[in-house]
Amino acid sequence: MTSTQCRIGIVIGSTREGRFGEKPARWIHGIATQRGGLAFEVIDLRDFPLPFFNEPTSPAQQTKKLDDFPHLTQAANAMLDDMAWWTSALKSARSSA
Image (cartoon, rainbow, N blue to C red):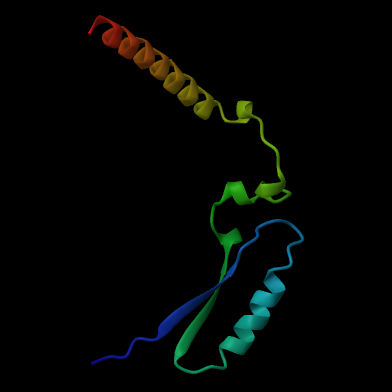
């Protein structure tokens, strides 16, 4: 029977320029690796293609207009058109019953 080592990732969650998270992640990794029986790895989100997180400010602090999401605008308009049609159809069916 082979023993598998538990792996724990220390995630650097910001990809922005001038971020601070790399310093504590490296510090935590240095302390954590002194513990035996566990494998620790620093996972840097900059190593993955995440364009949503590559904005100069936090996405929570940004204001977006609905025009910035044309695919959502089209879907919302289609949904509203469908709702109007079904509402009209249901009213007609109810009044003729």
